[in-house]
Image 1 (cartoon, one colour):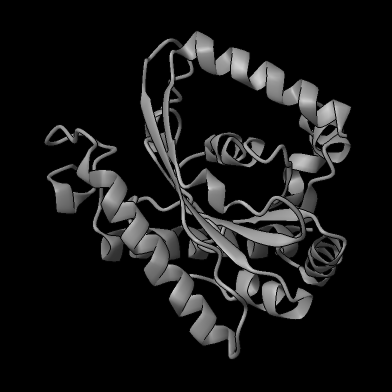
Image 2 (cartoon, helix red, strand yellow):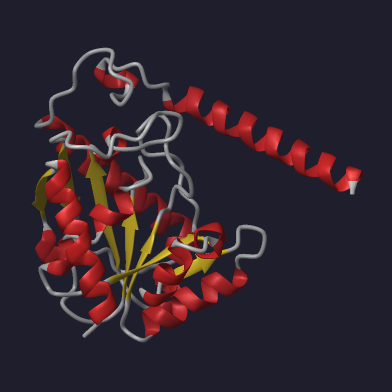
Length: 251
């Protein structure tokens, strides 16, 4: 029983109805009815974590998401994130958040993770970090792959948010749990290939107008290719690093 989380979900569903979002969910039976599991989610937009929790409501479970520390520092979102028992991630010192996630898993919780770490500007599946696999191995729990398609149309990196009544279709697929095995690199590769297959399957029945910013280049859209997006991410990371160094030298 989690009354705060339950209330927040009720509010979220009201918002989804106001926006006219049209959800299609398949594979929700793959969410374990009990016990710990890593819920691995692709990352295409700022709101996709709110949609990722929907399949878990079939077995009446809640997901504790790993989210960047800045969200917890915010005076509005911070108290909500803590009340929902989500896990803050300090990218400069991730050991504490990793340990907290493993502890949650061992206690039988579902922990939501973005293996790509950041939003995919290409809307393709990026290279994965190994954290999801390492957590699953250490806690002895399965990884459940979850792929969401359409979330990037609501709000994604570099484009205005569309939080009004857009009637946007959002497709969600939950794959079969993957039992943990070593080495973590091979488990990570297995997870990524599984999520790529799930994404391709979801895209088959989704309408992709040519030239749209949210449509991958592979499907005729104007989104950057995976290689172009990776370079954009690298350039942005380099610019942020230089800005940090400049602030240090000024201080």
